[in-house]
Length: 427
Image (cartoon, rainbow, N blue to C red; front, side, top):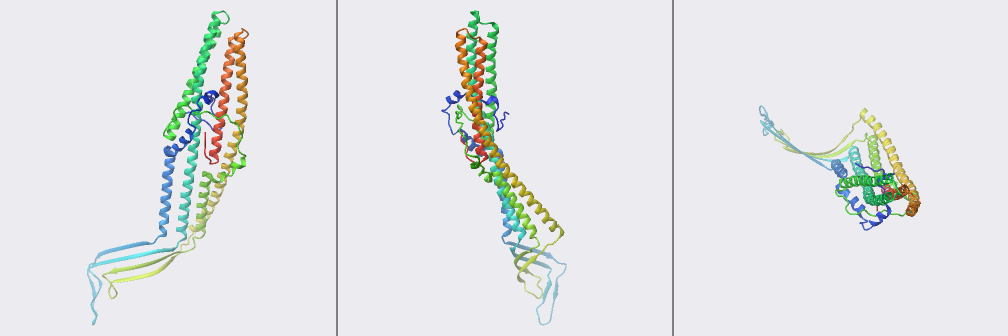
């Protein structure tokens, strides 16, 4: 697998500027389509989506505790003997029937339950955190797609550049062989020219490997691979907006939102632990049916309110644990916010460095091609050796590679800055 760090592309991922310009007819929205496709195809996002559904389901389970509950109980007992009581002047009363049947219907309505309310709020906060974590995973997937995309763009252009360099080197071999036959060059010069052909062929093979790896990564992430010519790399080296305009987006980044939701859940748990001394209050209404009523009614009802306190050492110690958890959540929130600001700052600083590199590479290209033109003129006039021409050709090729390497790195850095700030990425 070929990887690329956000800070710098591999030297093999550089491309020749005019080859990029030649592919300007490629669709400009290719990257946007790949990013959109990754939201449906990437397996890590699917897994995170399932986790979000699980968290939402758990929150619904906790919310269900707020609703009234209905309990129905029925029982049958076969007693050893029937017990009757006969009082003169009254009907016989059955205290214990031979076949005893009892039933009860009980409705309970929670009136006050701090612990349940805290569990509900914590579950909802966990669900919010899960959704924010899902968005953070989506940003990571976007980063991987951006990196693979620029690998494909640069690698595809380098394949074409290496093929052209191989063709040019082969033409040089013919020129040097002609000079050898005329006595103006040696067999060593011919061997060096042939070595340039092999060198260009190796560059093409390396670039093809990069393209294959990038296309495989894009197919894994998005379910599809780009086709056709790669788009042109932008030559614009204009500065980005001031850093302050980007830092304002740090607090709404998904990982910060996830840390904020997790902190909220820990706050709820701490508050609930401190209020654990408050009783749980429940209202109830019940109807009891039995054939062992004795002197009473077969059907009786009751209504009332119950208050339940639970005080124990474990509760007090759990409150301390909850307080410590809230402090941990606060620190993690601060770390997440700082990390988001640092990512934006690093990405913004990287763009400045890449802009300078692109400008310097453009100057090197101009100088290297001027030197190549001079070498061509001089060798025609017999004032330069084939070795001079071969060296100038390699220098010009290397300068072209360095220029588009810088442009590819600058384009990738701009995309990564927008991802770090939660903004739309465009090629």
